[in-house]
Length: 77
Image (tube, rainbow, N blue to C red; front, side, top):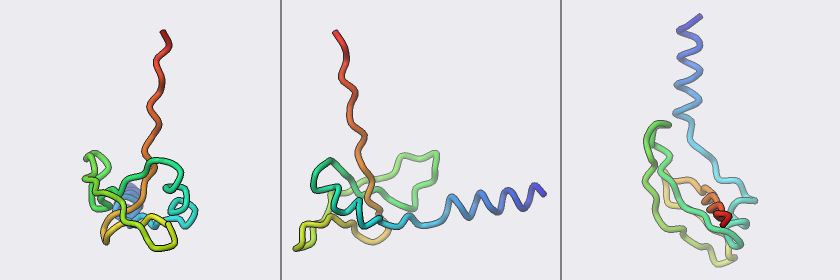
């Protein structure tokens, strides 16, 4: 049973992230980065700048996936 669980975890962690079409357009309006898909979950993924298609959609080089950059929370005074 443990072996099956570990196999599922490994498959889930090693699966490549697909770029969602809606995210490619959303990066026109908000900050995004291309993150390395080969980074393990406990590692900080390397990032590279976005690439842009002629139609305005963002995309990433091979082995990278589009990710939204979280908004910074404003501190209350």
